[in-house]
Image (cartoon, rainbow, N blue to C red; front, side, top):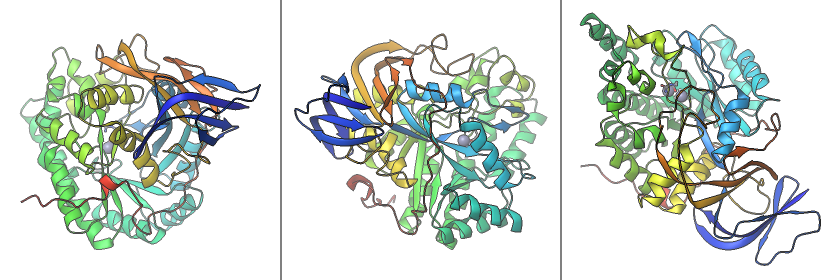
Length: 477
Ligand code: URP
Ligand code: ZN
Ligand code: ZN
């Protein structure tokens, strides 16, 4: 089976040129002008369109038992949504309870994804306990191709780690050459603030923000920076929402901490007034860290443009309104946390980033695909367009105009937090390893074809990033 993409404008973090791309079986084999197709090749006309490497979402929850319920998507519904939106690889968090055995959790998550996912996938291994058995399991899980850990500094008494466990995890990660991703909020502060607010009768979704203000997130980042500095481990801060937290990460980088930062499409486009909507509608906008004041949005856009924020992810965590968000009607601390956006990340980022002139095409590809591939050991198999790479390609139509709606989305959810948002661009054709998986908003792929991507340890030294990520960290004054 072969595919020939004709006359598309190929975009990577450092290249922009018109050429044809020939793919045989699962791989890109030639890139040149005026390639001719063998008689049995499928030809895809990409003239007037961009050709991007398949997008990577490095922060996704699909199977997620959490806050007394479980996230709604299956690997089938989530991967269909991902592909329609141009995401060809996702990295899911394995989040076992603190009593569970890590290796059993890894096997459980893998068994749920294999045979069900239509897109390629990998995992970050959640560390929710640390003892002799767990450490043996973590070493084995890394050997089996999961080359990153995930720790929660939040969610005390559930998924959260103690300082002792954090230190042990980072020391192990350092010795194994793997990166540790971290949810940074001070768990004790959150708990105390929640108790105080509830005691004052402040129970609605709008109070969620006040239980986790920016300083609580900034303290979490500062805490992680201290532990990373002490252990020399490489760390990645997930879902950075505000200026205060970003500054703590940059201060860590100034001191020589090996740190990378992720933000989410939600924080770029939604703000905390969403959680203030009446009739409990605000519950749809409850996630952690919370949506912030609008003043943070230009800071995050600048961070992406200037390279201090490496990746733009989703933290996709779908809980429906009708049966799950309502669990917190009388108590905001019981609203399952999460704002899903796996399907819409790329179209929103292109519309509000590239089309609006906030980022250029190269920064767009770097932050939504290439940097994640480099940080998480998938490059150059994923995240670029070159001979030898997987034929994961997104032929993107920059002239499409449409509107987001829960009526038409693929996600298994009864609302869309971006309902009514206009999009200016969408994937025309999406391929995964040489097979068309989505076409003009429709899933045409194969459920179960998605592969588990084994990743090796790549963090014994700093991964090579694009020039604009290698720049000096400015002094903050
Ligand atoms: O609110 C969020 N972020 N839900 C998903 C779990 C997590 O903290 O990543
Ligand atoms: Zn989190
Ligand atoms: Zn998450």
